[in-house]
Length: 340
Ligand code: HEM
Ligand code: HEM
Ligand SMILES: Nc1nc2c(c(=O)[nH]1)N[C@H]1C(S)=C(S)[C@@H](COP(=O)(O)O)O[C@H]1N2
Ligand SMILES: [Mo]
Image 1 (cartoon, rainbow, N blue to C red):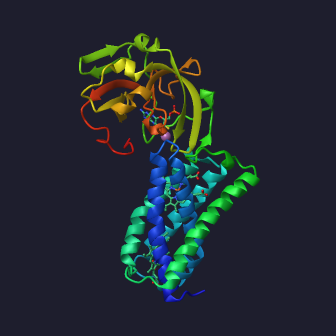
Image 2: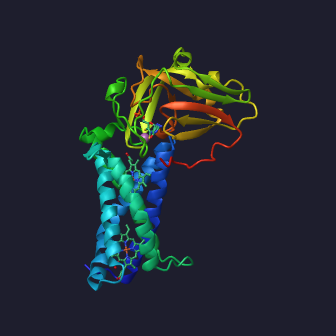
């Protein structure tokens, strides 16, 4: 099939809109831990299916172009390969294939391939520019965009329908898209690090928790912290694509920190150097847990103490905590996603 130039242009423009929209909605689905995530997840699914819908048209553009071997065609093929890997792993995750082997989850490969595709996408769109005529989109451009939008939403609904009718595990994913793993049974819950942290072997006798407030510094021992018996049922939801509900037990951060007047954020640091900064308004919801399901934390899950941050995604739940400090920096003074 050979496309008329206007249809080829519409196809490329469609991808020019959809791929950045996929990146943005994917990132939002990652950043949001509350019910609002639903919107990002549904929009992301629909946008992703919109990309799939354009595959036949884009193939018709790319086929003849490939035979011309224009400069940069190899990088375009690399882009196509990464997008295909991203699409396949997106659907694998959704249908419930969580692990791919080599210690990788479908979701990790999905995000990894998509992020690698981003620079190639920018290069490609710059090297093969398509003029965007703002003034007068033609009737067929508008019809095409409307058909693509409707098809994408219908396609998303169809995927969800198939998951439910087929009784597939994907029908039971949380509003973030995550699958349940090890609720009420922490030993069955995955041990997950954001990037490259190793599980440290910390000794309860030598471990200290540094607490910094307006009144100065205190250093607490394990026994001082382990007396905390506040219980919270809360769901940890990893961006790697799993979640678990557990009963966590420990000391409320509010009790450790006392009055917060004058402070704007609290920094929670790990023995590994990993840290997250929270707005002071979060403090009433935060718990420094020493136990889960009635047992001390395992080393993998954060022994001696880890943060429980209900309503926030897993990467906020700092493990192996060694310091909590009130500070006058705003909480957003940090990378939106951890860098280690
Ligand atoms: C998922 C995103 C995309 C993929 C996987 C993709 C892939 C490809 C491939 C494999 C080719 C053929 C090899 C080549 O000539 O480089 C190609 C050609 C082309 N692409 Fe893309 N592309 C994507 C998005 C875009 C976008 C956003 C634009 C422009 C806004 C665009 C414009 C073009 C143009 C103009 C050609 C050359 C057509 C010709 O020479 O006849 N592509 N694309
Ligand atoms: C080129 C970029 C991307 C494309 C084309 C894409 C496409 C897709 C597709 C087709 C699905 C399956 C949707 C469904 O059937 O409901 C999916 C799922 C998902 N993607 Fe992406 N994606 C991209 C980038 C990203 C990025 C950058 C992130 C995160 C930072 C991300 C996070 C997710 C999540 C969390 C799901 C699961 C959603 C659910 O369970 O419904 N994606 N993606
Ligand atoms: N110090 C430290 N804490 C961390 C991480 C990390 O890499 N280092 N990963 C976070 C991420 S991404 C998640 S999902 C949870 C996982 O907790 P779990 O291993 O107890 O399941 O820990 C969080 N706390
Ligand atoms: Mo995570």
